[in-house]
Image 1 (cartoon, rainbow, N blue to C red):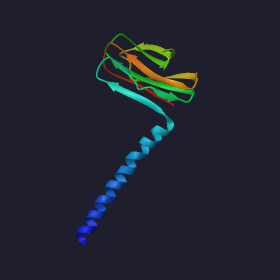
Image 2: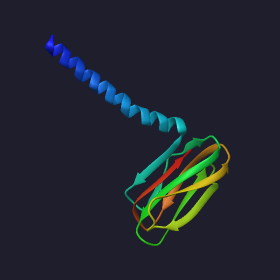
Image 3: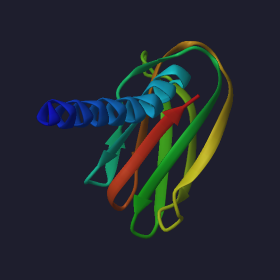
Length: 120
């Protein structure tokens, strides 16, 4: 019986841990977004459906000199873009009044690693 109680306690602890870790992931999926980190100086997110409205763009690259991020639609048109200094810390920008559509983000700079994220 003692062995059964110990096994039940371990199974319960594992299940509770899984639920605690799943909650933030569910929240991120519910709110929407995509991100990617790459070991090189350029990075692109997966294409994702954006429901329209305000889009936040998070970007970071390394090195010194110019860097740029672009949000593009699935038909190749630019939705919004901005240049920034590669030596800046990770930053966020806002794109307003973006229509509902499939889109993806690209960041490029002088050195890696690089990161680009889209969220709403």
